[in-house]
Length: 492
Ligand code: FAD
Ligand code: SF4
Ligand code: SF4
Image 1 (tube, rainbow, N blue to C red):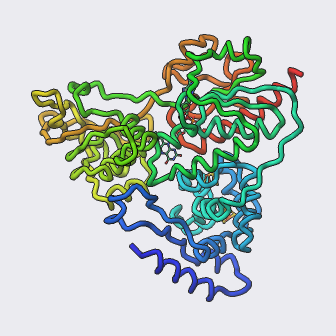
Image 2: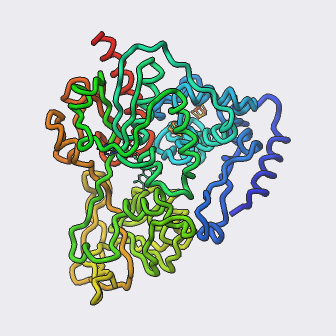
Image 3: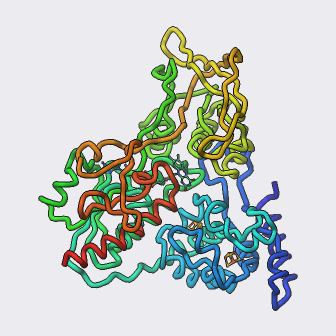
């Protein structure tokens, strides 16, 4: 791994050797700029961000790789529709404030998306430079450039223009990325917006799920503060479905429309013996203790965490990687990621798996936990694991795991973290039977408008898609905002 100084020097050397009039071939020949990172040996002892962000030299070199394609294929891969070539052109010209203006036309959360978007499956997947190299990892690093602009301009934020007041009121339930994107757009259209959040902190998974070392919480607060400054009202500690129902918001409290973005916060379990033992956690609880309640800050936080030595994390997605890497930072000696397929089938981002391995997490693949064993005090003491092999592809297109009979073995652990997925929270579904849901409990919406089966009630993000991504949730929030505006105009 190259140190940040070496990477910056390399970028400076490239800049000084670039010809004045770059051809497309020259641009595509510039190597993709690596992201500077904290050394793995150091970073497992702190919660600070792993990726350090581009320097100005690195950002300008990376921006110079963009071909400014007329048909903008990358934009079709961005669910919020950022004008990518236009903002990158501004970076290449060192006009960072101009770049921020372009991004803010479509997204008020670039510091977040630039960090956590799965760019390799979104905008960068369609990048012409990546296609020329037949390697998506060589595409223009759009997310890193977006992050650079957001960080560079963090103290120079211009709020978007807000249309004259319409007198209409919109309630937004939940404060994750779907709700924030919807609230911002509805507000820009001149409607008044109140966000109701069940927790004491806004941001949804951005605040309680994604760890500090991937997404510093002060950045989430900073980006959300833009929404408050636009006049959006935030009401914390309000659980819709208990404190007020959706019907009451509309019929008694006078909201003209409602957007529901309550996410997928209900952890799934494996239903194997031993899951009720002490020191078995859902990844949600484990991460919430650390991120939202700052359990790692033992000097200041009242929230305790379990002092683990040998941890098994069940699952192979981003949530599993986050839980495993958090356990290491909380002092575990051994962390095994137990996954029933192989590394190539893991749903986690490639970069997250690489980071987990660099930091010392072990991958125990083709392994299916079948029982959690407890000691005489009811605390986890081990896991019985069954070996698997890969069979035929399933509906997801990935080869399915087939258990090998008689291959069980036991490994000693003192903690188990279950990270095999989340389902939607059932509270609003139960208290608002007018909203139709599918068999998984996700809200069914009109594809064009994101309106639910209840008139004037729209929904988006994980509550509709199942556990998905930040940017897909934001895309749904923006789509719903346009439809809410049309609905309110029609109502008028
Ligand atoms: P959420 O972010 O889940 O927000 C929902 C909000 O609604 C919560 O704040 C909740 O408290 C509130 N709420 C729920 N019920 C009620 C109610 N009845 N009344 C009031 N408020 C309520 N995606 C990526 O793109 N990149 C990543 O790297 C990534 N990493 C992840 C890591 C973890 C640990 C997890 C759990 C998810 C990760 N995801 C990632 C997925 C991504 O975070 C989600 O897809 C996204 O946050 C969904 O947004 P949302 O707005 O639909 O809901
Ligand atoms: Fe790409 Fe995500 Fe940024 Fe859109 S928001 S340009 S998908 S990194
Ligand atoms: Fe630039 Fe790639 Fe988008 Fe083309 S596809 S405009 S090269 S980022």
